[in-house]
Figure 1: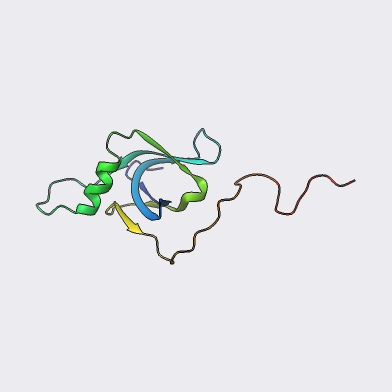
Figure 2: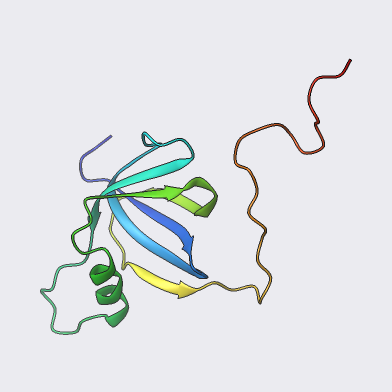
Length: 114
């Protein structure tokens, strides 16, 4: 992997979709979690500051590594250029999916048959 590539990670957290950029993404050492490291935020070189990006930057201030539950991850893309990190409201109304098991027997399987 080239060192100039970064990853755009979209995940759901508390009814909002987070879009962040990181240099490292892996399956992590915790089963069922995606590990993201070296979060990347825009530089403060411009006069105009994006309040959305400042909010997410403040939320992840001091974070070395984050572990995201696999079922919360919407998408991971390897990109050449960094975009703007943001938090947006989750669209789709007031319907939420019921959390289910990530690993285990298929639904309706009650175990070995005799």
